[in-house]
Length: 236
Image (cartoon, rainbow, N blue to C red):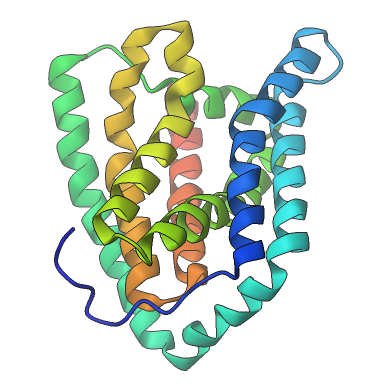
């Protein structure tokens, strides 16, 4: 990631916006999941409700503290809509190619294994597909992009481009598997499934200077993925 971006990176949060985005990461990654898992284990709420509450809190928090940033970053999208659309399309095509390579590798190494995060989404979809789609397609992309891309990547990008890609990719990938990996260390291998999309989300953000492009890309990826998982479950 040492090659310079084709356009200057101008999307920046203010100091207070960066603090707000970064401060929420441990809350979303650790504190809320632990509290909601406890509530689920006690039978107060089901799994779908617990996850939906988590993302509703994150979504509300981001709108409260990052609304001005979202408004500022909407301008590049309006100024260069076709370039933004092209970057999203290119990113999606690249993701398909990279995912095919990763899936092939995993099929060779662990032919009978399944990504526990995908399995959890399927299980939740069997409970209430409507809430799962609302959470995965709309709430999660905005919350996660403001944390991992605008927060981590954007903050580090002004200082060290390579570090921005490495750290944002690592944290995003760990976020999706750490809880499952603690229960079973073999699940750490699924980190590699999230590396391509994380790199491409950051690339999309960097090349368009609009966090909205990575949000929309994230929405498309999640929408297609949850639909594919739902259809696969029906076939099985």
